[in-house]
Length: 341
Image 1 (spheres, rainbow, N blue to C red):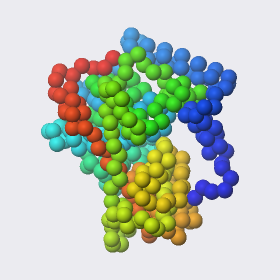
Image 2 (image 1 turned 30 degrees about the horizontal axis):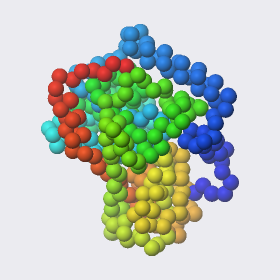
Image 3 (image 1 turned 180 degrees about the vertical axis):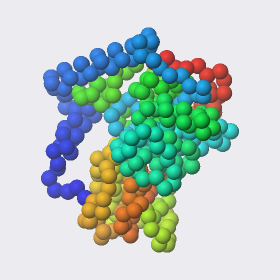
Image 4 (image 1 turned 90 degrees about the horizontal axis):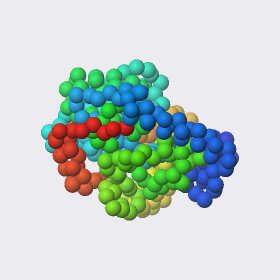
């Protein structure tokens, strides 16, 4: 587990976060790089809008779930809930992703035996939670066409607000409690690109009050499930960990969100944050075998083959208003209009 003096990477990340989400000014150097990057991204969006770059429009509707900022914001739980909700309404959804951090190349189908290093941790988590077809490819058009050929009649792109090559009929932006930070483009701020003139069709927020047309999302922790192995009991209520020392592990975009949720559930936890998409090994857990280890689902899919006798996944469910799902279903069933870049 990371402890002692912070690594150079951790120190750099801490410094950037203080500028992005705190009161520290970004400085001249970061601002200059940000201005150049922002100009390039504006030009890129303009090129798609006027047709200099081609946007591919598919034969089935595509829903993009993404965020404007660097790092995670709670997209994957929303995708999982959306897949289940659309299936209940008669759709046959498929999920496409680039599989960030995977070691493989080309098109990969995700199944129950897939390795997170091959297909990516988030695509594997989505498939295990939903059973839906999930295709991974850096070429998202190829992944989308593969899903259509497999019989999917609606596609959900996990991440991709900035992937303008993929046509879409709906965009869902996700924001956590941090919002858009200082609203600057990286590296001076957390934005992946300048805010487009047209907002997303829906903005889902969690961890803070929903305002105006915002859609509120609540993330609920479920019962803990044993990570790997077959020893009983395989499921335990979180209440059984109250009053005991517990190690909490999170290699996600915003680990503090997971740690805070465990504390809100009454647990006393020792925090062990890791970089987003961290590839875990047995050595990462050497110093925490004195107590139970709780981790996110995204981390658990990478630890199934490790020797962890007392490690538990804490699944997270996104709870959304029924009216939001109904609105999406209605938009998909009416003559879908593609969103312009």
